[in-house]
Amino acid sequence: MELHILLIFMIFAAIVAIEVKDLLSSVIAVGAVGFALCLAFLVLKAPDLAITQLVVEILCLIILIRATINKDLPLVIEGRWVFNTLSTLGFIAVFLLFSWLALRELPRFGEPIMEVVKKYLQEGVSKTGAVNIVTAVILDFRAYDTLGEATVLFTSVIGIMAILRRPGRKKNNEK
Amino acid sequence: MLYFLCLILFCVGLYGVLRKRNLVKMIIGLGIMEYAMNLFFVLLGYRFDGRAPIYAKDQEILNMVDPLPQALVLTSIVIGLGVTALVISIAVRIYEKYGTFDITKIKRLKG
Image (cartoon, rainbow over the protein chains, first blue to last red):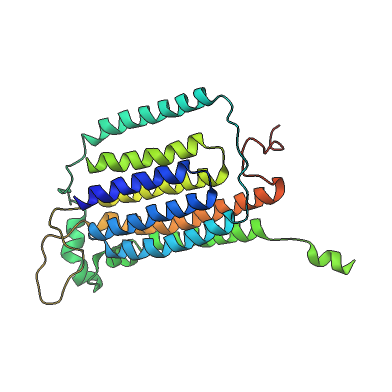
């Protein structure tokens, strides 16, 4: 029941974040969505995810506020308003139709299949020595995935440095 | 029902990406879609009356929730941070060059 309330709150906060005029208010609303997601992870018995989501959400908020503060939002006059909205809603309707068809094939909520994970749950402690199975999976059984994740993070840091660098200031001083 | 609410959250993000013309609004829509997908994977692994997948020393725990989606989503959350930071830096750079976040005003990219 509390999951339903959290999800409805997240949907309302997301609509506010998309539709509000002020950019800073929009960023704050998306922060509300993220923290509600953190609470939902706690309800779903995933404490590691809740901690990670909290840290990542705070970092995301800081980056987004840095990008939007002191920036004005000019009043946009929408061209072809009806056509754009109708085509977007059409795409969303098609997506919802196919996802509804796909959802009927999934197992019911609360009764997962647990085929793959049975082996991990039985042998996790004796093979890796970690009592936390999530840690055992990401740092031992699938350690190469975590290595790839670190590679992706370093690549994105290199990309940000290449984009935001201000070149050529020193050369002008030398002239 | 819960799956469907999660998909509606995804659709709100999709509407933001497709319909809005402000770059920051589109990035926010991307973030909302990412949240919805992470939540969907964790919902798939939940079990009624389940426990967190951590063994205690002196008790036998049988009804754990599925730890495999949690491990994959943990990777996905961190990569989402990297994606958001990269896209935001591109948006800041575009604002410095063109003075606007409106994607229809950025005309120099047209051929």
